[in-house]
Length: 155
Image 1 (cartoon, helix red, strand yellow):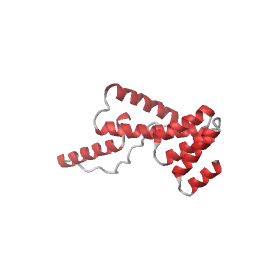
Image 2 (image 1 turned 120 degrees about the vertical axis):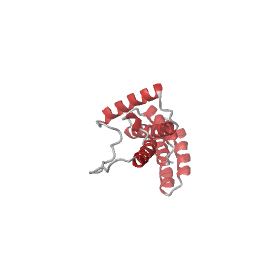
Image 3 (image 1 turned 30 degrees about the horizontal axis):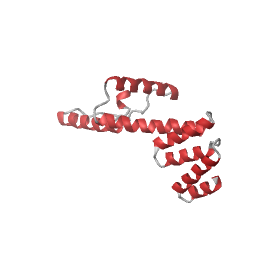
Image 4 (image 1 turned 60 degrees about the vertical axis):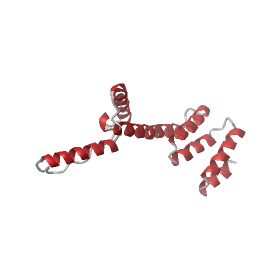
């Protein structure tokens, strides 16, 4: 069944592959491989919540599986990025949520060995004199950039 599922996935029949992997998981409940395959397929499809759930199933069977742990970590970050971007656009990244987000961002920076999560944009060599119109335009660009970068408020 795993070979059939892999072949279906290779030919682009992703949902058929997922169905076969689920059947394999039912037939061999102690096996982690079908769960990892489902998690990877869901991740590749941008279905990060489902990818996390399936990767957790793999981890029940093998807590040290690196692929499953990686899927959970990266899919979780992608979901968090989306949620933070939405909150930033709604101007709702305040209070305890902001504080906890900053603490988590600090932990992530330390874990990755980075000083910032998102590197700053390179600056121009010579900045022209500011005028009120230029300042207003720059503020609009900054607001637009901050909505595109959900971590900008956490730097």
